[in-house]
Image (cartoon, rainbow, N blue to C red):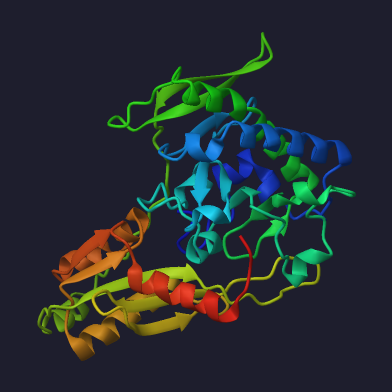
Length: 366
């Protein structure tokens, strides 16, 4: 699992793309890397990627000598005049945390960006107003014309504020962006047609003999995920909770990062706190929240929060969770308590709460 609650310390994706998790000292991109990034980004904008990819779930890029593919998707803003972005998910673990993989809309939101691990290529209508922590860093190459500053690049890691690209991340992004003009042109001209009912993806691959990128329609790959579940073996505990009647209440339960960044070390991204939130799905009121500290066990907090609610209010008829990983986590518990469980149906109460925090603080930029 990528976004609940923390990725494993070591995973196949980390081995395939160590650039995103490297603890090495930050090194900004070289001048020639900046040049390649902006040249390719301008080509992608010229190919009208925001229109071509509007109804495409994601592109699959198979880079030479990498064990896992890169996934690329369009991230639309809520208002068309706010620009658009390309989100780059290196490896299965990164893509498994994306909103599109989890049945949500590929739309920019505070909640989705707080748990995003990957790279972002932003096409804004104009140069952004930078938050203080980024103003002194290398978001742009030296002497970049003002009109080109509407394009910029960021690295995201779940639970951290965005950060400028390192030289290693720039090298990876250059490879990924180089594969896009060919597939965008093929999709735009109708030479590549995807079967939406079969959930096909456009797969990009490199032909070493001709030294060119090519593309084809392909079946979406199976995403290998590590799954956990909360299993309660204490029959007395379950019996005690089952004494409480089932009510008409529908709840939302989520473990997520809140957009309340606090600085950890100088010259490092700020940290988002991890929280467990219980909300009423019908009236969208927040019922309970818990900020994690240190090495608190997430599963124990979830069980304790549900136990307190049930003993005070009764068993809810249904609990909504964000994705299939979280649903699997609660499946055993909800089955034993005869509580309905739904995933990927929207979390309006939780998302509204997170967005209200961001609006109040007026923090961050996309």
